[in-house]
Length: 107
Image 1 (cartoon, helix red, strand yellow):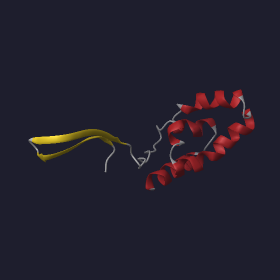
Image 2 (cartoon, rainbow, N blue to C red; image 1 turned 90 degrees about the vertical axis):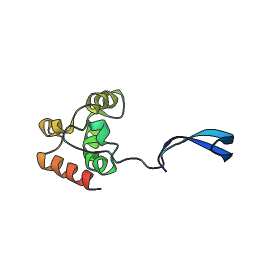
Image 3 (cartoon, rainbow, N blue to C red; image 1 turned 30 degrees about the vertical axis):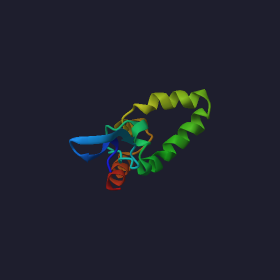
């Protein structure tokens, strides 16, 4: 069943509703995140395949900036950066980026 708000009505007929309640069903399925060159880094990290392929980038940031404020500041800076910028920054090669996009979108 799709997530959303539903009204449940019980009665002798549609004209004679004796009990009604509104319920909200949360989704038990998380929609896959589509990945392309314009996808922001933070959104790509929500996709399990993309996150696995971006893990070396995260590890490199942690190694360079530590786990403290420097790392947090860099993550804030990088979060809105589109994946297309990563080859320019030397964080990924063009081939790695294309492989990441292809792998993420075939899952």
